[in-house]
Image (tube, rainbow, N blue to C red; front, side):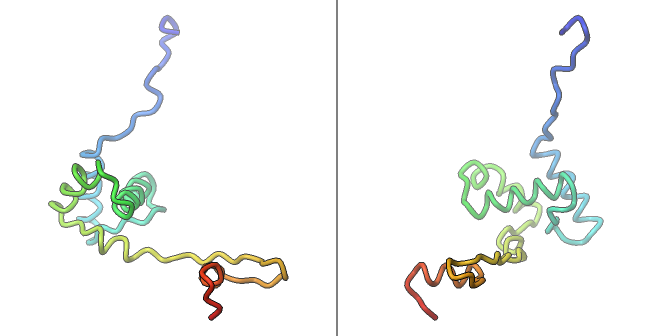
Length: 111
């Protein structure tokens, strides 16, 4: 494959610092840092960072989150903006219930 000039570097993953730079440009352009997931690669990356924050991923919290804080990005605010989606489920009787009702029934709360 080398003789055919095969490209062994098919996927180039941007470094964290590159994403920080893109985020800084986004902030300058839009006036906020809460990048929606539909905003392409940067949106997907920021969504992943919010997930890392919510789940307290060690590498993120120790190495990456401090850099976001230095930029003024408060992940507590970023994750509060997320809307919880309610999925509808059918029970065995054919009744449609949302996740909150299903969770309450699972805990023995019939309210």
